Length: 241
Ligand code: NAD
Image (cartoon, rainbow, N blue to C red; front, side, top):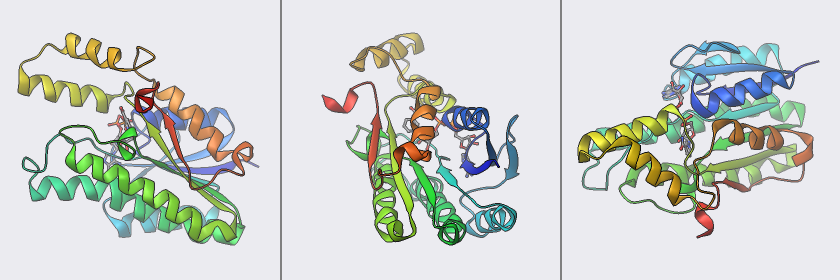
């Protein structure tokens, strides 16, 4: 029988690659996103709406045991503390952190009754290090690392594992949007900034979403059955510097 995986934010970028790889590996994959997906079973869902997340996940878990949750939906926002207004602060925290709170909480009853489960939170290298001009985003990703660890401790007795994946710079629509915004503000040339970003990485290139998906598949699998409460860095060496 196929295992069931719920992905949030699976319509684009890293989430899309995760969906592709899990489907290829014989998982039944549900995608909770605000924009439709071309693959998987799409469920229209805004992760900032806790009641909506609960109701969509309950609908799924009434029919299927949830084996894996990948809480991945997220947005990037640039700004130091002074250029982050209250509305922007709330938006980043609501999507990146409250969305994960809602999804994790909603899958736990199914995982607890099955005495098994793997929860993967898409954090960032910015859960481990701060980057300039990234006040709210840095904070949101550090919070996800904390959710991964706390959930690991609180639910280890149910054989539920919880880990955070911490990607460095990965070439996705979110990355391109962030570069476009920066270039629009600074007047810099996009190709030049893109090249500089690649050169900042010890491996000399940006990561690809498919590479992150492979790590997520591993963490979801029994091969990772002794791994919980961990922060898994996949960043081409960036945070080793
Ligand atoms: P992306 O913009 O390509 O995809 C994000 C997806 O989340 C989209 O499908 C979008 O519709 C969905 N989404 C946004 N708001 C939502 C909401 N309120 N409810 C439901 N879905 C929503 O981004 P990506 O680069 O693939 O990023 C995915 C995750 O990986 C994010 O959490 C991001 O912070 C993290 N991450 C990305 C990078 C990177 O360099 N790209 C690095 C580290 C971490």
